[in-house]
Structures are given as C-alpha cells and as structure tokens.
Image 1: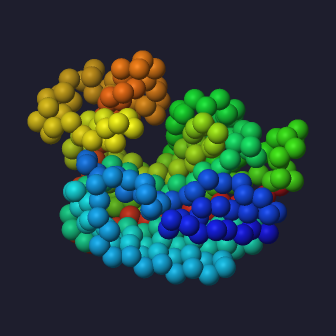
Image 2: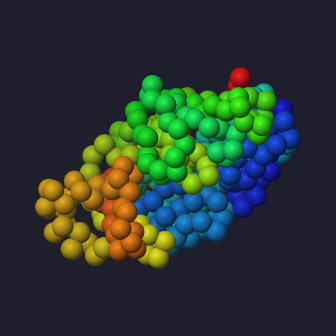
Length: 272
C-alpha cells in the first residue's frame, strides 16, 4: 500500500510497505534567466503571483501562477494514488508569450532500494556518473537487488508516459541519471527547433546565470564550440576544477505564444 507525505509543495516521501523509497519529486522548467522548481526553496529568479493547493489522502492538486524573467504562465498539477500507481499530470498554460528550455516531471528514488535501471533496452548500473541516459521512449524501469536486505520486498518501479502535448515545438523524452545516492528519472520536453540559444554557467556558484546575449550569439556562431558546449554536463561532465567552477553549457530555447500549453501525464507503478 502506498502512502505519501506532502511537504514544500511536492511529494516529499513515499512509503512503500511503510518504508520511504524516494527523495522529493516535483515539476521544473527554465528560460534563459529563471529556473522554476515546484519544490519550495529550489530555483532562481522567478515570482509566485498566486498559489492554491488541495490535498487529501490519495489526491494532491496545485494551481500556481508564475512570472519568469522571460514569460508568465499558470501550472496546474495533479498527483493521485490509484492502487499501486501514482498518476501525475502537469499542464502549463502561457499567459503571455514565454520562452522555454524544457518542461519536466521529476522523479527521484533512493539508490538503497533500486540497484539498476533499464531504458531503451539499455541496462544501467549505478556508478554516480551523473550522466543523462536520455531517449525518445515512453518507459523506464528501476529494479531492486534481490541480494540487498533493504530491497523492500523486491518491489520494482515502472515510469511510463501516458499522454503529452508539446505545442509542436518540443519533443518528449525520458531519461535516467545515476546521481550520487539516488536515481533521477525525468519525463522531459526539449525543443525540436531553436528560436534562440543561450549559454548558462551551471555551477552552484553561478546558479545557471546566462552569459550576455551579444556574447552568446557570437560564441554560438562557432560550430565546434556550440557542439562542445551543447548540453555538455549531461553527456560529458566537466572534470577540471576550473571548468566545474564555471560549468558553461549551451541550450536551445523555444518561444510559445500566449494561450499555448504544454501537458504531461506520467505514472509510476510499483510492481514485482
């Protein structure tokens, strides 16, 4: 039987047979300057204009009106426990023309209970690599280790995309990432066109601040440099201390018009 705790606006713990198997979940998106996370205390440079939440034993709903540096939108979410599943929906409606780098439904699971992952017919053993194993697929699976005394009755988890609306400018992906002591699984929309590019400094110190727009345009005209920086940390994390301090990464952004929407319906099913 699944039970949850709601804290800081998100599912903060999920009890499976009375044992918590997750780290806080959430919803995320970003533009050139702002990074929004539904989890309170996370994110940079955005303003909450209005917020409503409604929680019962098995249903948690939110409506959040957000002003970003480069946009304004309303996010409606629903998380529901149905048997051995949690069904999550997230709808983002643009109130003004708005820029987007991505739109993410975020899952996090403790490495203690899940020793390996499978996505797109690829098996991943947790090595704390922090590499994004990202594919155009609608399914990812985490499996417990039968030899692990903490395996919580050998329960596995299947994350599956059920429905999307990408406003024609984005493409849905799933990825699995072996980050420190957890598995991070994202249902993630990314641009399939580039209305503009940005270079962000993605270190803890700079908190995803972008380089000046004129400098960015000049640098991204150099094909080899753009290729080197494009989503750099996701496939080849920086190793040197200097590069880790600045951590420059190039990203594509799309512009969605007022009234356009993005939508996810994703479920996490706990199964043998």
